[in-house]
Amino acid sequence: MDRKKLEYKGKEMLEEIEWLTARADLVQEDILQQILARNEKTEYLSKYMHGSLDVSEFKRRVPVITYKGVHPYIKRIANGEDSSLITGHPITEMLCSSGTSAGEPKMMPSIEEDLDRRAFVYNLIMPIMNQYIAGLDKGKAMYLYFVKAEMSTPCGLPARTVLTSYYKSRHFKGRALDPYNDFTSPDPTILCEDSRQSMYCQLLAGLVHRRNVLRLGAVFASAFLRAVSFLESNWARLCDDICMGRLDPAITDPGCQSSMSAVLVLPDPALAGEIREICGDPSWKGILCRLWPRAKYIEAVVTGSMAQYIPALEYYGGGKLPLVCTMYASSECYFGVNLKPLCNPADVSFTLLPSMCYFEFIPLGESGTLVLDADEEEEVPVSRLVDLVDVRVGCYYEIVVTTFAGLYRYRIGDVLQVMGFHNRAPQFRFICRRNVVLSVDNDKTNEEDLHKSVTYAKKRLEPYGALLMEYTSYVDTSTVPGHYVLYWEIHNHPSVAVKNPVLEIGSEVLQDCCIAVEEQLDYVYRRCRSYDRSVGPLEIRVVKRGTFESLMDLFTSQGGSINQYKTPRCIKSGSALSLLSANVKASFFSPRDPTWTP
Image (cartoon, rainbow, N blue to C red):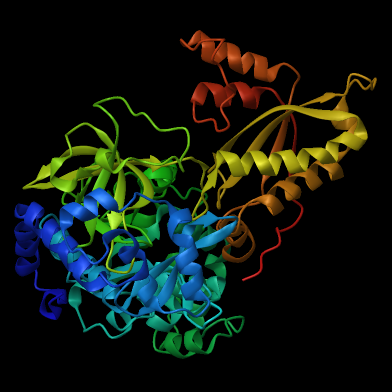
């Protein structure tokens, strides 16, 4: 990729979008031919292509896979074998996905030039935004970015999240001075691995620069709301620091200490007084506009599972700050951008950039009807795949990618709907992740894992003559951070004469059930709970006997069949949640963090 195109050039970047999307079919064919030429001698491609570089042969011979199909190769590379197992370029790092395999984070191969592609997408954002909002070069952006602790593979390759990789790269740390990307947070505060110290210093810097902040944001809506919650708990300390012109001694990270000394140059009791008055107001509705009065919008991912945080963002923004979702990306690949960033969050669609990878799609249903296969691992015939330019408006698809780093016809797991086209490139609305029922932050818990965890935990009831008869779940975002809620209906065993099994069992046992569920959930969930603090303690709400019969009556009264009814393992219906809440007898939380080892 031409390095000149990675610089911020405004008009030239917009022209690049037009050029790529107008030739989407030709760009896609060229991308696939490049991938085949570079990687033809890899063990994986050789097994299917036998040295051929013919695109039609690739489409006929190479199978569609999930992580299960590529994991043995990734594991071998992680253990020290050569990158040529899957790619013609050296793998420089493994990116830890939010998805898991056998309870551990999925690791995605990444090569050096992948960082160029990610930087290319980031450098498209401001030219797009400048078409809609003027003067964004006249102030600062308070973007709250965070890194996570790194691991290493057995052979020494870094294993880290895609965002940690980017923030530690030359593209971010060595970026040129740019008035359109002037952040309030000093780089060392972003790169601090202690999330609480990082959060404290970034918010402090944002408050010091409050009169110059034009944009607010974080990568995910959940992270931005955690920052608001942190501010609620710590604004008095932050004001003390501003008033006295010194950093709280609890901040011990050397990088934070050094970089914040340039932010807290002199005591500023007047500024501290302004912030105290604002934060001391009993109502925090619209507080973002009061603290940062020049702010024009909030930038964060608000699609998919993050849509549950929109009401809270609108509350703190007072309904005055547009919610902007700029790009669509994953650990495997960055995909595209939102060309209409000021649209309603419900209408966000992303234009896929045909130069990022080779895209294919599995049809999942015609217009208005989404049909998901029951088994995510079921083999998909290659004849079913549809090319990027051949998808149809209104239809649903699962995205499949082939990348330079060694993923071939890999199922990302995202379900998308085609909303239209920009030139010849389709624009997709994100619908959901396949088989994910619960998600607060980076965690993604599917129905199978949830069921296994509940099955394990409910055994703790048996010594007390109690049985878990039925359960369901939902994500409670009324707390910050959000947390998983399980609704349990517990009956006494027929052979045991107990009128109220909950009272007989006692709170300690049900708290033990909470932590037992959490201990069985996957690595990413446990990291979010124990290390990132981005998910709150799991809660079990015990409901009255007969509640789930009433739930069935509710759903069947809305047109469902009793013969086909299955208790939904995740509840999103407002009326169903109201029914469950009205029947809660007792509530219990996990008494500690689940075990997590980096």
